[in-house]
Image (cartoon, rainbow, N blue to C red; front, side, top):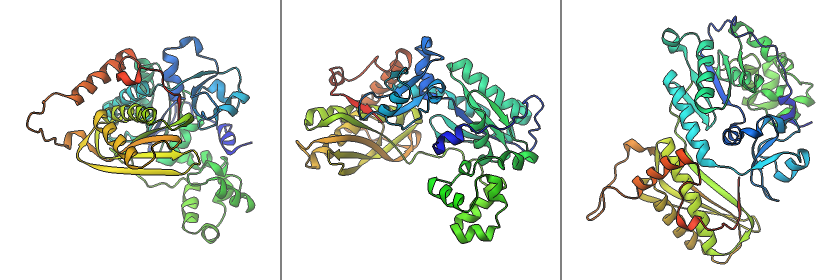
Length: 415
């Protein structure tokens, strides 16, 4: 049984939310349930309650998300699609619709920010919240968590699970234990009782190698780890030993850090077959640039550095980047630069397996200034792409797209 499967089968007694003591538990970890799959089911309600896998079909496809009905067969994200279909051949496969995910994620985070300014995003579908300052206005942490869950489901038709705890580490574990669509409180005086029965692999920083090393020492549960002298752990694992000892007793002093900016935003595609046609490659660079630009605008960022990833058929990977004079979130500008980088790489007629586009050197859009040149229009491509964003949010990801992307594509698959 895999490490992921072990963690998914852990069960712990839950504290009824209506009687839970959340004193000293200001930290929430909110995690959307099978987010990408749940968003797809909004438009496919007839598939609810059935195994559904989101990802690109084909020999090189991977699972982006799966409903819990599919997960019962062992399917999980990042699994090769061929293996997923062997485990669950009756599953319905849906190709990803990234525009829809970004729009709903933005709305969910608006709910978070309406509760507290102390929101630390971990990804598009999970975040830490410190709601200690919201008690007088909105109630106890449990009440706030329940309100968030209700608003998310009412407004967007998707569910989330929430862990309520004294620390980030314990809150994240709690949300995992109550999935899907649950709320679990770990009282301040119940942290040790919650942690110690868990497998040691549940701790942050315990990967497969560390887990194997701990197992060789006879350490299988967090409780086992807690009983090992710190000096012994330091001798075996160096500085990480002290970290593991602290986590085994639920000690995590990290605060929720608000407004952590993404270091970069990017997307990449693996072709169903290796491609050496420059026109096809540049058309895929356009599609990726459109997606990256939409994500930048949704997140409220602009970027100055455009980077492309070009992976050859022999898996040799080449990256090239260029820093622009001005930061941008306009797909046309990103695509023009990405194509220049591709041509400059000297890979004309070289078979490529994968291409990617990434924006780095990000900053909040409101802090960036733009120099309008003589003869430039004040309203241009950025405003046009913002109008496209609105149409996509209202009518779906295929409502508007560049003309060159309307034709049949070669067939990349989303990672």
